[in-house]
Amino acid sequence: MLAQTAVRSASFKNPTPPRPFSAENHELGGAVEFMGAPMSFPRNAEIYGEGESADYLYKVVVGTVRTYKVLADGRRQVGGFYLPGDVFGLETGKEHTFSAEAIAECKVLVIKRSALVALAGRDHDVARQLWTLTGDELRRVQDHILLLIKSAQERVASFLLEMAERVSAGNAVELPMSRQDIADYLGLTIETVSRTLTLLENASTIELSSSRRIVLRNRSALSRLNA
Amino acid sequence: MLAQTAVRSASFKNPTPPRPFSAENHELGGAVEFMGAPMSFPRNAEIYGEGESADYLYKVVVGTVRTYKVLADGRRQVGGFYLPGDVFGLETGKEHTFSAEAIAECKVLVIKRSALVALAGRDHDVARQLWTLTGDELRRVQDHILLLIKSAQERVASFLLEMAERVSAGNAVELPMSRQDIADYLGLTIETVSRTLTLLENASTIELSSSRRIVLRNRSALSRLNA
DNA sequence: CGACCATTTGATATGGATCAAGCGATGTGG
DNA sequence: CCACATCGCTTGATCCATATCAAATGGTCG
Image (cartoon, rainbow over all chains, first blue to last red):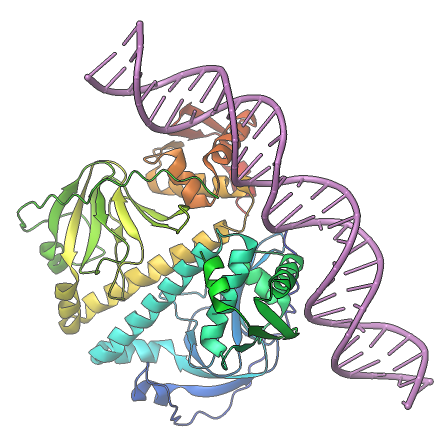
């Protein structure tokens, strides 16, 4: 039904020597940052595959990551986009339920789950953060469900507002992902996404400076579409 | 867009004197069962509303609960159905993101969140269970997303198989919820759900003994539709 | 029995998918 | 440096699955 273009390059793990890492991230405490080993992934590299055992969780340092699942007939659903500071691969089950790929060249912190769980067993604060992160992800996915029952315009508008909050430099949004990624995230086809964007441009709600760069001209119009 | 019928009866809280409760549930340890106060709700009673502060979490003892959200224009999305043994209302944020209602007369254990969190701070096992429950819910919601990108037949088939796993007595599924509930869960209209069921019946994949009682005649056919 | 509500069935409309072609940017080899 | 292939995106024409509107049926309860 939905076209699908996932360029599934072979799993590419580029181990860099683990070393203490001091980031400006505070969500997962200092000890945790220390546990993370930085790794780099080229564009479209697989970070982990659906069904692989979930031994690690990840935190984006630079770049963008998508998680996704491909149905038997090739339809792809993108579960989420993860930007610098975001944690992904957080599961309580044994195996990853989605696959994860680098959308663009990116650097992530890789954290051994067992070590983190062990630490959580000693440090209540870590345990609480682990729980909170999972809860945040839960809420994000619930919001995603609400997206999927809306009309195409509403989905695209919601998406733009969401991205604006996350990557905004003023009103300009620099999208790291392709139209196909957006389409598979929104449960639409690439054509519908494209058409909807031009529609919004014609209504001078947005401005497509380039295909990856979108300026929000009229946020309230977008918000009105938001639900 | 989607019709919506939520009979929003006034919030109905029927406090029963809290007393120790020993259930046959094991997911949330004994101390936790002890903390829960049993409460009863009549059909269609609101258990909590979206936006209310999430001071409690709940475990179904008997009956069925639906969580849902209503968009500005009246479209309703059902987030999930909770059967005996299931925990709902589990949030890490301050407020409930969905509303919860009793689908049928039901009894739930009400557990004070602050008490549980305090306990988790002392008991690592409780902390872990709290995390696991949230993770389970996360996975369930992720599966729900995958549902929403499928065709009507696939959604209904998936739904029937899911319910069969949860309430099956052999191949007969006794549905506690209305067609409207199902429709709002699957992101379809009530008419489409109904039509799809008769379609499956004509294909002798299922048998509609009564509108709430469905017999699965050909599970593999349903599984084939499942994705 | 009659009113009411849930469900099914029918007829028609429509939003988004599909199929197909065009276009602009980027990169490559001659 | 230019012709040409490639890739991502847009635009156009048509089709179809599901929504919408409407009515009939059936089951439940006073």
